[in-house]
Length: 316
Length: 178
Image (cartoon, rainbow over all chains, first blue to last red; front, side, top):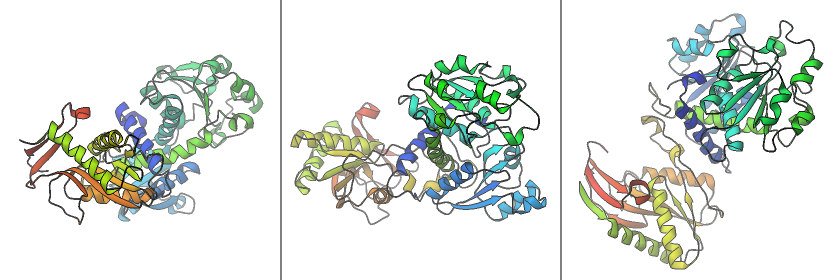
């Protein structure tokens, strides 16, 4: 495959290849010399038309550890804020010789549009498009779960994972449901009915409105951020009520399985979906998720860019 | 196809290499064997087992994947990465013996030297190969050679190990391209 647009495009074996590659790259960048020469001479553009800290920095760190040149391009302070279209921006990047574009955009499908158009020839990596998908986040989450809970296994068979919170607006949840079930895990979504998308019954998941009924049986809980910037209407009566029913607190933390882990894609609203003591507890792998993110993104860049320059790069 | 090295000859060659490594380094204490995956890693494990049998104590051995340092990455689809396992004492100040199955252009070994440099600074780096088939493209030579096999560029040297292929065998095949 040439692009990484969506988890739906990946086969199970391709996903496992990415995770295994990330495992080796994590080891390779563990030594005293963090920089590898693999992508020397390649230009990677970070095109972020929506705010992001960790995804952009993570991709930048990944690209730099593989010796690629990185150009950061954010909507603020660029021609995008003057109203330049995605097409003109893409053609500009093509003219500059970008080998890959990492794109975050508030419109669902923006990455796919860029990949399918003839505007540019490089690889397109989706770093979050609207409420659609965030594939690299799901891959780093699966990587983190696999490291902690799979006991050396390649997939996530037999594990039970709860994704809790604002599923409606969450591209992280969408990508994770696709990937975790593809890897054999059982996924339960926990959210108030107002924060679940229409058509949820067709997803390969179980749905629960009762966090307390689920908490004791899961191997990992993935807390989602309440996306205040996407809350144009009232989805729950108030923040305190949301925390009481759907937040992770020390009481729920205590009732989890001894081996279970706590995850959050960040940025956290401490005190809303997760209490500070839960976020900082021994079960929390939230900081580790960030570290793993760099390894997983190195694997994505390696598999998409290290091979033949034109045409058929293959993840297989 | 012609048979170049049947199983008994292969075993004898590996035993001789093991002795030569010990002789050159005055014992096994300072040695770290690093096999280049896939078949170099199996060869390194065999040499390590031999050395342990001769010396009566364990020798440091591991694997070193060189994929990220190859100079021909852009000519082929992306390759899967193989495990790198550095033994407990590391490579710093050690006598590192790189182990590979076939020495051909020398480009794999160049990449291995780069990969090794990222990990540390060995006292010496030596090279052991089961087969040296000639046609070097870089100024690299092996310190320990199982067998020198004169070949033409178009031929393929195939090394098989019981662990992977069910048989111990080195053969030369007439391939279209290498």
